[in-house]
Amino acid sequence: MASITKFEGKKGTTYKTVIRIKGYPTQTESFKRKTDAVRWANETETAIHQGKHSQTLEAKKHTVGDLIDRYIKSELPKKPKSADLQKQQLEWWKNEIGMRTLADVTPALIVECKDKLLSGITYKGTVRSSATVNRYLAALSHTLTVASKEWGWIENNPLARVSREKEPRGRVRFLADDERGLLMDACKKSRNKQLYLIVLMAISTGARQGELLGLKWENVNFDLKRIILVDTKNGETRAVPLVGEAFTLLKEYSKIRRIDTQLVFPSSDRQSKKPMSIRESFERAVRTAKLDNFHFHDLRHTCASYLAMDGATLAEIAEVLGHKTLSMVKRYSHLSDQHVSSVVERMNQKIFGVPTGQGIAQHND
Image 1: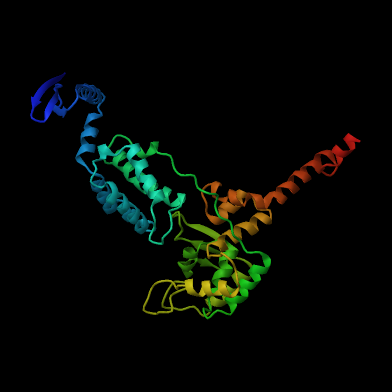
Image 2: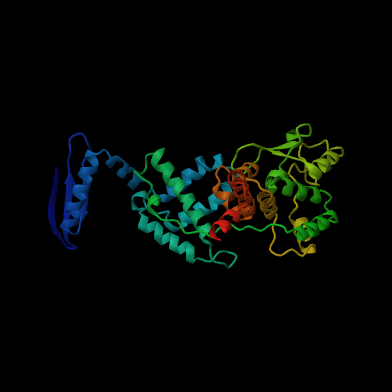
């Protein structure tokens, strides 16, 4: 049962609330207003009876800084690819609200921080995009989820009640036929003798830059005409067909491969065990080809776009690119409109025996 005692002092009136329930430690709080004391007593008693009060106490014992420090130490090593970026994002949260207890972290507080992220200026002198702000929210959200489900520090993740920013539709930039010719010519003339092959493989397979540069000879199967991508973004291994000119050139290239490394495209520094860097040579080739707003990742978009225009389904494109869901490849759906139209037309011809639209025209005459 709760007891509320009124005290008069130099600083004014204080209401001391004491809750004593058999089998539980005594809870004590002081308030300036009696209504606050009554509300706290009711909420605390209810939480104790529902078995939630222990988590409330845990939330008061730990700060956001404690949470982030433990998460960086125990959880980030499990995500080596994104660890550096997420650590940077979590450090931002620690600087903003690190001294707050987890009990103080409410949806309203998170929204205040979100607004600050949206209006803040980055080191590049630009405003953060909605997508970037959502990544900051996602980084904090996972720490709170772990604190709730695994550590028992909080009851629920307050960020689950905070809306994310609406992101623009994914950018689709792919090479037109003339642009592809210009870029490939520029790559052939590059001082980096492997650049042409790397770009050709990127267009042919849809593999990411990191996946190609991390490729090892043990994962190249010339008999089956495929490469195995191990170091992928989603952590899953996938096999990708390698055919045509990309297959022929890689097989020729394998005859002069270096024997001191398993990397297909190793650094020119023989003391280094890292893959080669192609940033400067690729950017130079793009400038030589006079391509506007084109990045290496757009070669992946190019592969997907060519597949769509050649009649591949979204499911087939997702399988080639290694996407788990179709949401990421829906951006290419407009490119396959002509293919979809031809499918519908063939169905109508088979069922009605006339080209699409002809039967309707005859009916209206």
